[in-house]
Each structure stands twice: as C-alpha cells, then as structure tokens.
Length: 143
Image 1 (cartoon, one colour):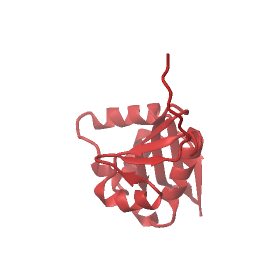
Image 2: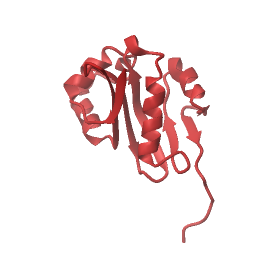
Image 3: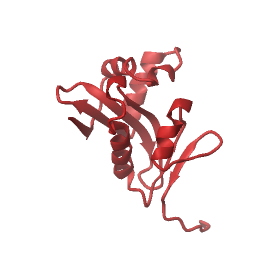
Image 4: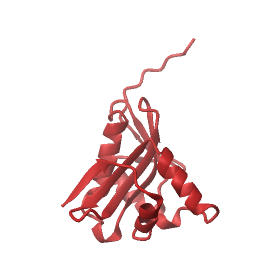
C-alpha cells in the first residue's frame, strides 16, 4: 500500500532516498548538496510515493510550462519497491499535473537500464532523449 502526492521534500530525505535507488549515480560531486537543494526547491512538479509507514519510496521531479512540455529530471523508486507500478503511477500523475496527455509532451534523459521501462509507458527513443507525444498540435507561425 502506498500513496502518491504532490509534496516538497527536504534535501536530507531526498539524499537518503537516493541511496536506495539507481538515481544516486546521476549527479556530479561538485556542490552536490547545494544543487540538490536547488533542484528540490525549483522543480515545478514534485511528486512522492510513500509506503504505509510514511517512508519515501518513489519520487518524480519535473520542470514544465504547464502548457506544452514536461521535462522529467528525476524518476526513481526504492529498489525494495521496484516492479510494483509506482514509477508508472508517478509518471501518470506528473503528466496529469502538468496539463494532460493531449497537451503535454514529456521529455527525459533515460539511464540505459531504464529504457525498457519508458518504452513500456509508450515513450519512443530519440538520439539522446525520450519523447512521449500525444499532444494535439497544429502548426502555425506566430506573427
């Protein structure tokens, strides 16, 4: 049993969470704690998954304009809770919070171990980004 919610977390809790996920290897050492604090403060979307005891078991962070784009910067699940659908639920909740699949295109840079997961969500692989595009889109020239 777990809950998904929009929530800001502390750098300390996130760093603790990173140790229990595969996300911990995606950051540089330089100014790590300072930059994590900025990430957590400035992410437009901050979703968490918590188990029944309140333990943080999943996180999705993203930047968006709430009109066209969502760039997922972080999506991770505690290794002990993998393959329970938590990552999928976080992604669906983020897409909805950003504006819905008919308006929002999702981009992210995927760890090679996660490509299969993103493809199962319906994302397609580009050269170095993943794209999920269900957006209604009519081309025009702004004048």
